[in-house]
Length: 382
Image (cartoon, rainbow, N blue to C red):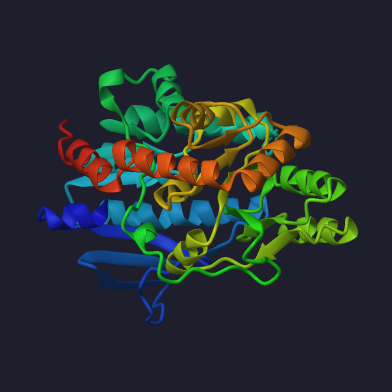
């Protein structure tokens, strides 16, 4: 999105923290807690605030708050016309609120997850005072923004429920990088996966929200059925990864392969050798329409069929476009049935992947969505 703005002649400054799984493109030393540079025509300000999905809630919350406070300073000093903030976390909206009310700047707020609805539904945050505070911040962020963006149908509805007019909300889901995943030149498989195996891959965070217990449950069922030709690859990191690995060892689940995170380019090579993408989430009703997972869009961009294990808008897309399998949550038997069908009907599986790629091209082409996003952000008026 930032590159598209630059291509249209806009000056863009991107503010971020540090994340172990990503690279900003800056390599110099931090001075007074920050470093500056330019990457692909984008001015980058990176704060020395390390973040990891495996950190505890308190540590992550402290990082989020420090980032918001540092960003407020920029919002009050820097020269700009529009401030754009994207969640999560919800605290990302605080600099936008300051810019709107203290400097009269235009503010566009993008919502990637509904807070505090999702953490409340998951039971991650239970303190009523904290939930009330987050709810107030959510309301203030939405009502301070001149325009909002929602990444899924449920998110758009959630913003509207807080009193924002529909004509101030635009739906722009995560997009598919069709170019990155089109290159099939460097396919690879992790150690322990044969070329003849059906390889199903989950690429993402190993946290509470991801519900990867479902993968261990289906691995157990597959072992019972003697389907050692089906391998489940979990690539990424997260708070529960060590626990999941230990459970797999205790259960003798050698059909589950854990792998460290890889770069997007390396991931593209893995996708080129993958048979099926796994779209897994915990069975939380708030997830059904209120999330827009990056990995789903990576899978279909790579021409992979997708196995989804919870109801909602993605399950409906998969069923409507016949681009994978949609199975009920917490049902390892039907999950295993779908994997067996995929392993035993490879030609049909490939066609489902073709259907997914067509869906990516027709509805989720990132270049097209970027145009919508840029028009919405740059067209904002007081």
